[in-house]
Image (tube, rainbow, N blue to C red; front, side, top):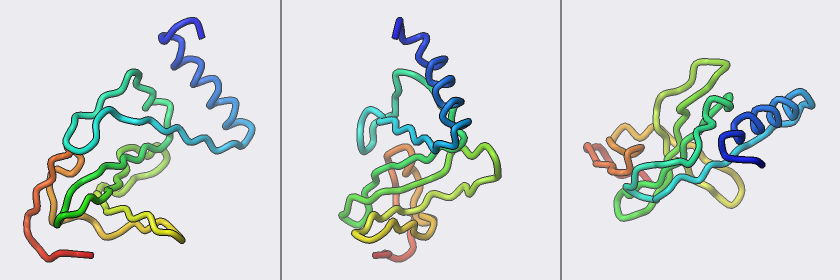
Length: 118
C-alpha cells in the first residue's frame, strides 16, 4: 500500500466488494492499554462499520471481568446499557446490565451499591 492515507479508501473498497458478494466481515481493532488506560487508535475507520461493539475489562469484587456495549448500530436503534460478558466453554453469555457500576468504559469503574452478582 502506498501510504497510510490510502488505507481508509482501500478498506472501504474491499468492504463494499465483500458486502456485494454476501460476505460478513468482522474487523477487530486492538486498542492500546488494558485496564484504566485511554483508548487510542492509529487510524479511525469507525465510519466504515455498520455496528461497533466495545469490549472492556473491569475489576469487580476481586475479579477481572469483561463488559460489552454497543456504541454504534447503523440500521436500528441499539441498547445503551453496558452488560457483563462471560465467555463460557459452550457459549457466550451476555448478562444483565451493570447498573451498580459507573466508569466501566473509561476503565475506572466504581461500585455504586447493590448486591454482588456471580
